[in-house]
Length: 67
Image (cartoon, rainbow, N blue to C red):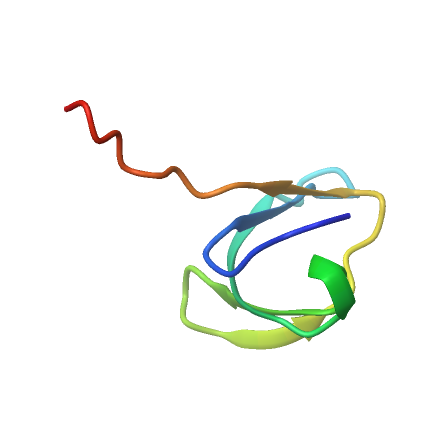
């Protein structure tokens, strides 16, 4: 897994009734973009997380200079 500051981390719910969670990666602690990551959830809670196989990194969208 590789991430950059500003990317989103999507953590899929692993049990019935548990929703997916989205967090912003605010710091990459591991070497070469690897985990662990300091993340901030939508409610403002921050934690250090080493994501498992139920997680996906989504790159932040760069502004399109042509727009």
